[in-house]
Image 1 (cartoon, rainbow, N blue to C red):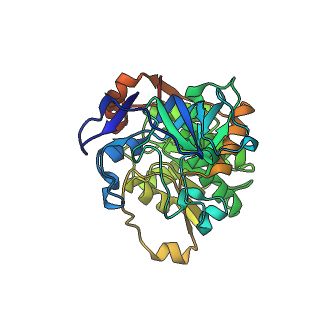
Image 2: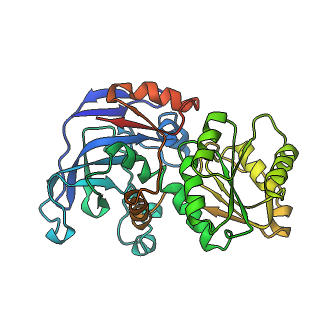
Length: 351
């Protein structure tokens, strides 16, 4: 089968033919139809994660995976309901099934988690073996290229928004800021409207084309942050919403300058959820966080239930997409474009 693999960090991935993988008795072999491209794919190639988990090459990249059931392992129970030809999406975080996080369904934060796309198997390949419990059947009328990004770009901000909602940060007469409206942020804008209980949604970003799409997707106000001091952004925010602070923030960048901006704009008792990983450090004053009783939520990817809920929204026609579809042989080219931030929306490889 064809596969795109890292053989050496900080070098282009190699597009090559390798053996089609075997499956364990509890696994299903999925024939990949599409796989989304994520900034973390670029970060993996560029060695960002090595300080946390130095994965030995070769690594088959790609974790936003959708395809069809090709072969079913011998111990997969019939009650699971899978048959050959079923359309499925892959839940990425494969836990050990025994830790306390797995027991409550949060396998993506299992201390022994395995990730497709961060090891021997990944979605930028024609086949991927998946434990049956991490597959979700989807309606065959839905497009592969639209489903793939929902397993990361579409679920990560969804989980972050749920954390803000469940903490009481959202509601009428509240203002939520969506920082960054790229691959994750354009979904975050939509979820802020769906889950915000009437909160005013403000999208803040540097790219005017991305901001225009955010407005189209439901943002009540858009503010360009390019070349502006915090005071200037606050002034525009007050003009748009009547207040110069944000009651809740979902940061889809995780970039140092945006984190500083976010906490400078966060209100007393405000909640900040970060789902972005562009940077790697937080350097912010401590006293205002304590004296203003602000809350920082870490929110990582999504679990089986989160993805199931997102798929239900997709099935109901409540999620819109901005996609750039490309072929397998264009993977390195698209990684370069993503590295420089020149992709609007989400890039998806489709076989």
